[in-house]
Length: 299
Length: 246
Image (tube, rainbow over all chains, first blue to last red; front, side, top):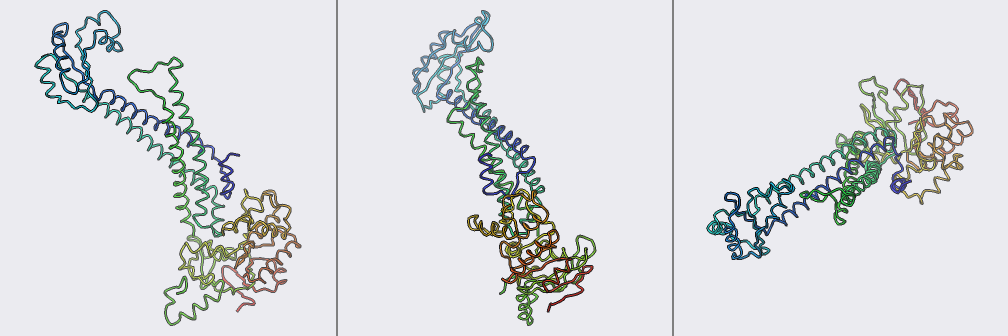
């Protein structure tokens, strides 16, 4: 006998455990598993968006576009000089050819032909934290010193990342909402089936003078404990899945460089407990509403 | 202002009519009852049970005895007429007031209606549990009562393991355990041997002696004669005879 069964036996043994309860437990466990996956997805998307943004904030990139086969070296030097003289810039340095090739390697591969392609020269610029240089003026000064220089403050990329992460988070929240509605509908259906199965008991209690809230409490407790136990199992399985995903690289599964790690940290995992807590509350509220509305039809 | 007072009684006749309502435990006035669109199973039923009275409800099968009992223990609403219970006009009572009225009534159902998943002890203790008493407070009372009906050794047995007569005794113990103001029983001695039947009737008489109003639906003429109680005879949904009643 489980702890939930013991608590229920002490407080609400007026209701027998109906047939088909295992199916409901299974549905709730699966729902909780999916909800915990969606919640973990929200946390991963948010974490990734923050890390992408943190990586790009406080940095600028200047491209010196090629004229013919290569970017003019004099313009690169001039652009670096202008940048180093700009207040708020702590570092400005041109990337070497090797760095440039390493950047395109994931897409174009490591081929001798690639090295001959006319790439722009990139200048990496780091700003003092919190510095907000006048980018328009800086772009004008760069254009004067190096006509082929283009300033990129990553604003467009950061905005895209923000909106992508927002869409992922909203999508996961929509999945969570759908799962919550599905759980509520399943519990409502099960409660009504339970009421129909126990109609004789409910009617007898009613005739013996039981208040509606007494009968409702027996159902509430019954479904609250059932949902709590089943959803703890579902959330625990999801937690195990995230923990396993965090250790994939130890088993030779390489992580994709531009995607965030799929695992949850020890600080993030406890948030998954929100799923059983919410599922149990949904079950409690749904059972209460279903039973009270059914009892209102009795004289 | 008395609880459940009908506006139609506000006037010169109020005092006398309200006094009549208060005086009776149960009062039926021109009560009719039909299920759905079917024919009336009770027609123009008028009677009153005084507090502390002992009454048999008799009549052939299909006469309407069970329906009349259902109206008294608030399982059904009448199609027409007035019913007052413990001085409350039911047509004016709020739904929230009904559970407290129901808790003052003990019912022995014809089909027993025990909860199969509960032991004999838990079935009998149910009315006490519903009234908010704690197990430690009622354990002894329930055990004594089950011993009185001859089931002291079967406290933990489930109804499915009890015979029909034993189940009936559990049902009777459950109906009387909370010492109700009104006890209703539908054929309570139908499934028990004469000795046990006599013992149960003694229990009802004893409860009645302590003030419980008792109404028993039965076919058993010997039982009626043995107690010399009042009798309401129903035939085809109408009261055709009232013996020993005012």
